[in-house]
Image (cartoon, rainbow, N blue to C red; front, side, top):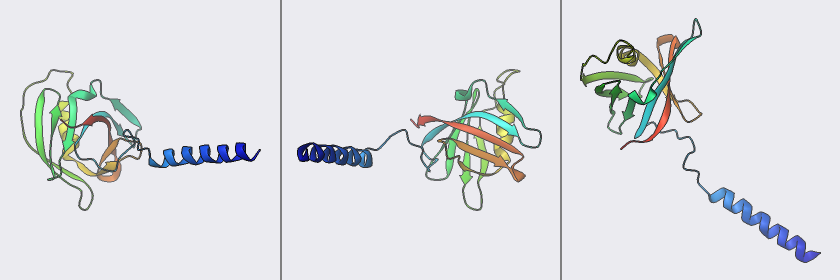
Length: 147
């Protein structure tokens, strides 16, 4: 009986130890840097209307440690700066300005980015960015580590 109890205690201890030391690489992170953020949707809070982005991989942001970012707005390359001091602000800088087609959300994406005043990790592995008053909320999914 004692041998069985000791064996069970050892097994439980090993399971506990393994659970404490095993790191899950897919766990949400508090850092927004060096991740390819893909724009999934925008919600207009006063009306509750949500626009789902049909091709999130075409609308991306990569925040870098030096407070610059790069990304795509459909067929255009974008870049600029961001700050997390006193909220969250984005200043869109140089970008290509090609016409991406009638169905493109590139202009809306750039307009929304220019209005961002708050944001950060959403607690579920994504990124949320909001304009003043939180009237429009952009949600981004983690598209993996930046190249």
